[in-house]
Amino acid sequence: MKNIISTIVLVFVFAQAFAISTPTNTNIENLNDLETISAKKDIRTDTIKVMGNCDMSKARIENAGLIKGVKKITWDKHSESTIVIYDASKTTIDKVEVAIAAVGHDTTNHKADDKVYNTLPKCCQYRGKCCSHKH
Image (cartoon, rainbow, N blue to C red; front, side, top):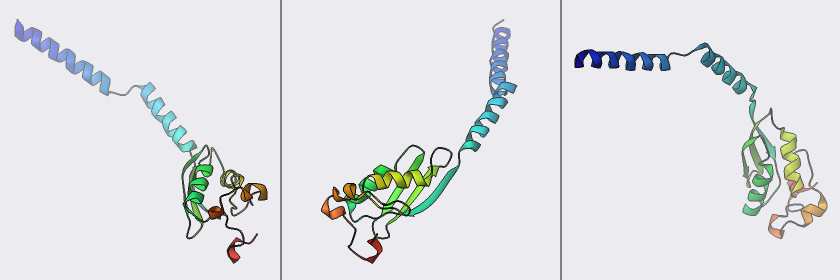
């Protein structure tokens, strides 16, 4: 009798395990929805030039450029190159440049307002320091 009950329990457990691991049409549709959502992401990497001088500039530039849709932003003070990884379905590189210029740093396509630039700490002010910074 114990063997019969044990066998029935084992059959029931295996049947339940098989039912859980077998995908239903709903699961397949959800997987297709997930692929569609993933396909909507348009992850891009662009490099822009951003003027600055020091580690304070680096922090300000990277914080300002970290707008909605930006996954990662890294500024290099030696090359003044900024690498931006972003979701183009949520933002544009132009919006990133506008955000950075708004805190006082000239970019490839946007010049910071002089009043904002003049509020930067002296170590961060880059205009007139060399020929590449003249605007």
